[in-house]
Image 1 (cartoon, one colour):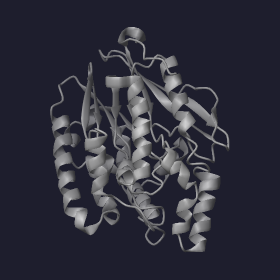
Image 2 (cartoon, rainbow, N blue to C red):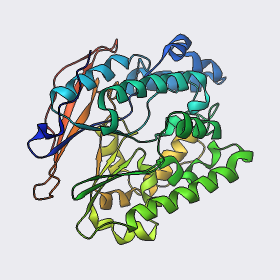
Image 3 (cartoon, rainbow, N blue to C red):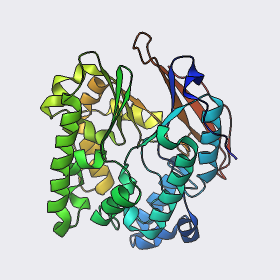
Length: 351
């Protein structure tokens, strides 16, 4: 049993947040499907082989074995004296790529959120990731955005599309990256649902603009945005551009590993690639506009599992001085996993 969080004063006057992303918890329904069930939906044998090799050697060999890592994260976060927590999206394995409209994904996300809320209670903030809402599969054979996923996320799981958390001179802001970057997800939407998605995006952009425009003169912004694809679109908002110099940190997830973030920076400005699958088209389109990431002072919170090629992921502790007199302290805590998905290893200090 994970103990309760320490009292707020347990960080010697500061606030220590535990930050995690891309937990990809798998409940009983998703576990029952098995790890390769979706490969049967791909009729092209070459694409099936390519995806199998990508998962086995590079991405995640055992995508349904992440549940023990969630418990390890919670235990380590409390042992490190974290009093607050932010989880930056992607709570379920989303094996069907349909977001929370799929019963298996819904069950996984519900179980994961119940565990997080049981430990941190009101001192927890949750960001909507792309897998909560759905997205087309790697080659675009199945899946996609569904309004039913949005309804279940916001009403049944009480996930806020945009939120603000005042911690002294720091204003923490959470946004829904899929809505902000909706033009990049045009192919993921059902035609009959597109007008409602576009209405939701306009409403979200107004809400985000209001959060930025109401900044006090001495406040600094820490932004939580699951998918960095949204950042160029966010920079188009006048209120965000006006106060972009107030952003001291943007925490992203989605990329799973610093290795991917490093390559993303290296490939910034590349042309968009078409004809190689919907995922490659979307990712290359994001990289085409990735130069703006630097202005947001981006740092990646890796997934708990990381990538297969590096055999490990982790979580981050962020220590803040609410008076703003001391710089924040970002520390990466490593989690190691074997090929069987068992967690282990020790934390390590980041910058």
